[in-house]
Length: 83
Picture 1 (cartoon, rainbow, N blue to C red):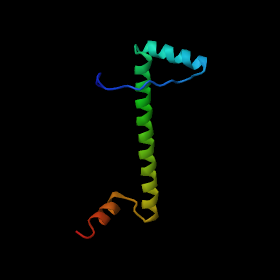
Picture 2 (cartoon, rainbow, N blue to C red):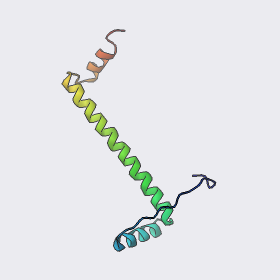
Picture 3 (cartoon, one colour):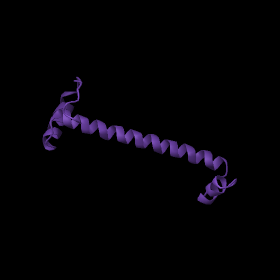
Picture 4 (cartoon, rainbow, N blue to C red):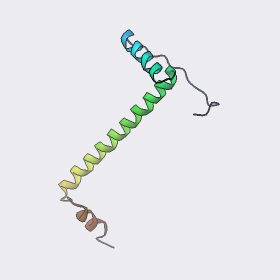
């Protein structure tokens, strides 16, 4: 992130033990708390996007099976049917 971009301060409350763990993790990673939080948030966001992708993939797979599309050859037959 460019240093000239604006930042928004957030206040987060944690139970004391979790706050201590967060402090220790920031120290172990040699990051300040803001850097650690940004990294954690990016990782969380990426994991959520991957979960959403896999859920869409599972949905598409179920729909394909319902229509009898079971193999790549079945897909090719549909894609290239009218070409």
